[in-house]
Image (cartoon, rainbow, N blue to C red; front, side, top):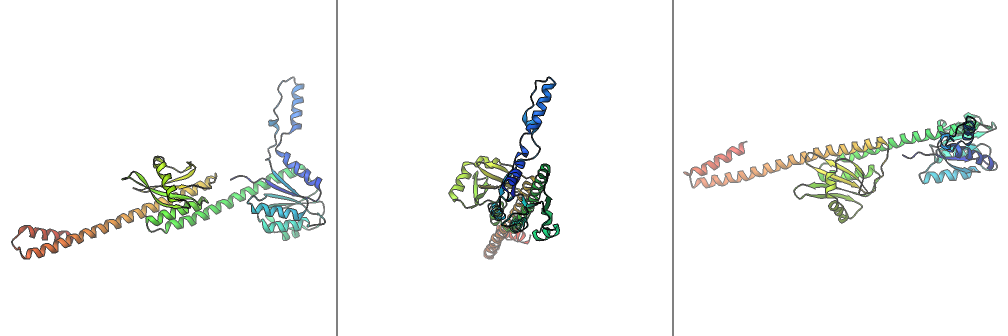
Length: 362
């Protein structure tokens, strides 16, 4: 998951907000003063080495900074960021910004559309009590209040700590969402009662979990040495069949999830004597190890259910075949008994009747 380093700075004084923005932008650039001092020291000691500027880079990250001169403008920026799925992690706002919204109203309005943003209120005046600020804005655990003037190091530390906090909480929110999605997907797979519905449910679950729309699922036919398409979504059947035919050997050899198989996300499924494959065309995967663990768990549950349903269907099929054979034997017995009435002395007919009785009694 890509880290969010987006910060919004709000101050009605352009020079102040631009100065604060430059402080954060320069946080990740080479420390020229340190490099110069080290170079002078090296010359005084008679050393030829000139230190590389990279050695004096700040430990802080490089931020993506936006600025606004009014609370109303900041609100629109936050709203647009939320709508496109690229929210700000941290917002620094001045308290006094005449003639528009002050920092309190700005923060309150922003909190209504973004519950997760970290807010830092900066002021040189005690316009509001901290309790009142917390009560008006809400979510006090995501609200800080600092007095002007402040040191650059304070801003560096706040930006680093709060962006890290936002990203840590976002990761937890994402993991919780993945888990909830997994439970829904597992429920779909578990309620399947036959292989046909199971393959359909499995494909739908894999598409849902990977936030995809297009894919297929197929079963290997050992007799025909070919893949049998069982279900497909949002694609032409001919295209699905062509993919299976063109990649037959590679699909057969796949033994683990592959992130990029001919541009597809490939997921092998196996039961005792069933080899299946799911190919997701537009999967949105995550680099987080927890996501992959949940994905593997969904595949494992699908395999277990495939094993159970396959065994049940074979058992039912075997029972049906046994009943059919018993019916045939019963017909033979009835025919032999009728035939025996006119051939009382025929020992072969008697043997057929006796053998039929023996089989039917088992």
